[in-house]
Amino acid sequence: MKIKKIETEFEVYENVNELPKDVSELMAEAVKARLRAYAPYSNFLVGAALLLDNGEIVTGNNQENASYPSGLCAERTAIYYAGSQFPGAKIVRMAIIAGSVKNKTTTPIPPCGACRQAILEYEINQELPIDIYFMGESGEVMRSKSLANLLPLVFEKSVL
Image 1 (cartoon, rainbow, N blue to C red):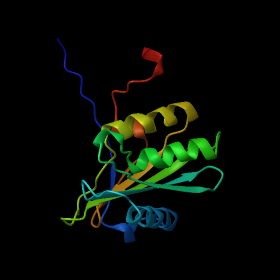
Image 2 (tube, helix red, strand yellow):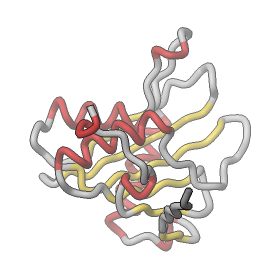
Image 3 (tube, rainbow, N blue to C red):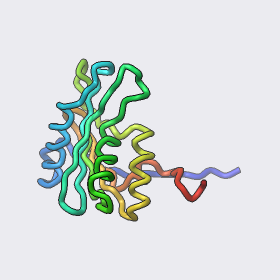
Image 4 (tube, rainbow, N blue to C red):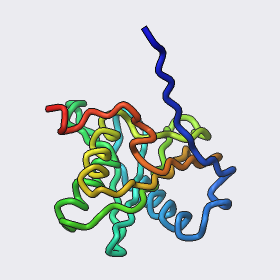
């Protein structure tokens, strides 16, 4: 037996005011998208904004359904929309903000496992890392320079 150590590295910004201007503007779009989320069951609102290599900004938010598995997360809503409306465009950067209606969220909330897998598929296909910034309603903002950094042991098409 051997032990394999896997490490990931993140940049941490104290708050959105520390972000570069273009990133804070993208996060502002995610904030707007979050306010339009439909989450009457979980009361957990998430907004995502994507910057594409053609300059377009695409947003998404979580959409719930009384049949819980039928809902869709903000990140996948935005990614699938970008894929359908801007085929061939690459996702350069993603900003995510998440938080509960019931409790103030001050810790960064990363994409869930299903979203990580979906984002990874796009990252692999476009052969370009996706720069991901994520936060709670306030407080620190974390940056991962790629989705592979968030999901180091990947499941992708080469194993099928």
